[in-house]
Image (cartoon, rainbow, N blue to C red):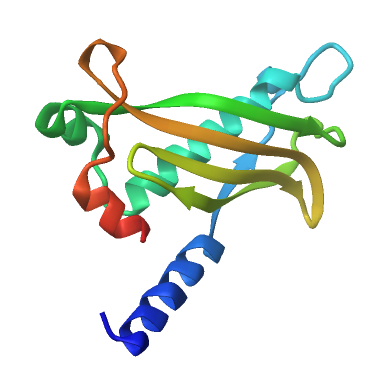
Length: 147
């Protein structure tokens, strides 16, 4: 590969890793605890919904991926920081940024914000697994979309 083509490929990869997906969330009464703040586990639900929307918006059908390629995504690791509380009826935004893509895993940074205030931040490692839970490579079409 020529030096120019490699530079273009590196630039495209940098653009993809810096691209941020945005997903809106409204806090409902059912999301809160007795103190009226969002129950801590619900932040994990919010970031899961955001990742699902991100995958869908890339044109990836996870049901088809399971049926055709025999693989699914699974969360391998979550490192989370709870920084401030969201409350009933808050309008939140989940921002997802891809940090790394390897043959069988994705690493993403996710934040839950109210306006520009970061309430929750997590780094999530997603792996691809086949039948029986064995590690598997990401489908080629998905890797192409992520690079």
